[in-house]
Length: 138
Image 1 (cartoon, one colour):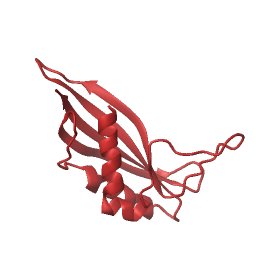
Image 2 (cartoon, helix red, strand yellow):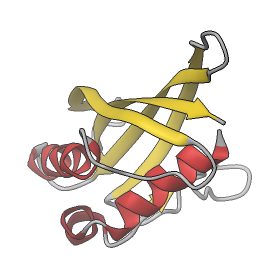
Image 3 (cartoon, one colour):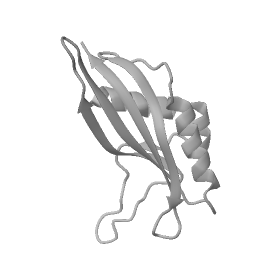
Image 4 (cartoon, helix red, strand yellow):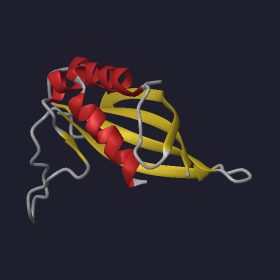
């Protein structure tokens, strides 16, 4: 659902705590150098959208679904502290917040998992934030 992703995107871009850490760098698609390297050209730190899943949960006359988004947080600062701060700021911006969709009803939004680890490149800290949102359609 593009409306929900747009809400997550704008909420993260507009949140002062997140903005202080990533300077508005929230991406649906991270830019990469052209062949042959294919290296990421985005400025660190940043947040990017990962996989999105939906479990339909409609009943009677109500269409609804539980959406799960993976938000990836990336940092090249020494250690994991900056990445952990970004992960925590994302949770603060989204978890159990009263956010509003235009065409559908956001029943609930929760951050149910956060994880930070070293990326295999040996330079990058990678944070994963899992967000669950229940949405009812008219």
